[in-house]
Image 1 (cartoon, helix red, strand yellow):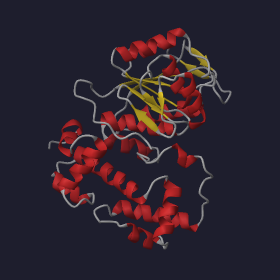
Image 2 (image 1 turned 135 degrees about the vertical axis):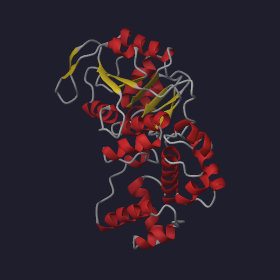
Image 3 (image 1 turned 180 degrees about the horizontal axis):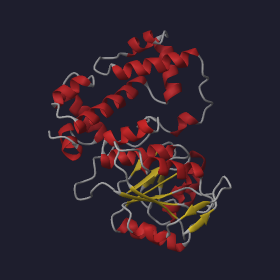
Image 4 (image 1 turned 60 degrees about the horizontal axis):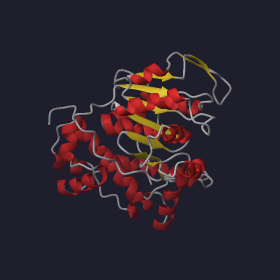
Length: 331
């Protein structure tokens, strides 16, 4: 499963404002698109970031689809960024040039957050930034990473692993999970959810990589009914929403519904609802001055005490502390 949400970054470390993505030779265009889409402009409602793509030196960089990218920034841009992301490339089995590794080490030493997903994790490992830490990568290369770097604890099934100043993600589209997690961790759920909505993506996925190894769920009428039930549940979070009621609306038995739900989402109905309730609670804590007791009611918890227990367990801090860190309106 994906790593539990850590406590928000302390006040001494302000949320990142500038983002630099290192583009190696043979870079994956999907990975480039992911970071550009998440950290690029999203309109007036979403604050932008100072975002740049960097390479060993400015100029054309070959990609995995045969179309070169014109990169205008060299490694010097890594020296000032608050967040550095090492993108995956075709030559990941060979360590990057010493200058690249030095730039990553220097950035981390000065306090920047350093991240990577898919085989970009191998770049962080080569720089020694994963030594003694947990990390993940594409499930196909997890064994290779563990064999090459025995000082790294490889969590092969995680969508992302947060080690504070170093964050790693799984393969391919899990780059979205990594980037949205970083947004949520440092800028709050409202911003992460707004960016996710703009990209028509879930702001947070439960479960790990194992859910994607099997054949996809066939699309049929039951999938459509399931989607309708999920939409209905999102609009009725203030209600108890027992699985029996969800199954009834999907016109399935409770057992069939639970099995179908897990196959389609990679998690259980209870875990999905919990994640949805907490995500909505985060938004309300950030964007309204509603009392915690009222927020607990709106997201379906019986009392503020129950919300607090779930918040501390899943987010690492109580609701009021989260509000002080991320509130956009006076409490």
